[in-house]
Length: 63
Image (cartoon, rainbow, N blue to C red; front, side):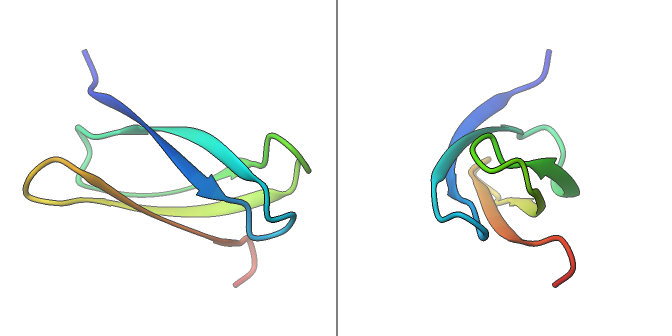
């Protein structure tokens, strides 16, 4: 079973905060997910620290 952690992230396009689920069993992740509000593609970069806490960075798809 995966350890999923909810995080609120600000969309780099519309500025709305959206909730994403982070799989904390994977230490480094890069993926694209559409904003739940404006439907534009967000490039997520996720790292998990030594305590199991996720750090999430969200950017425009082409940055």
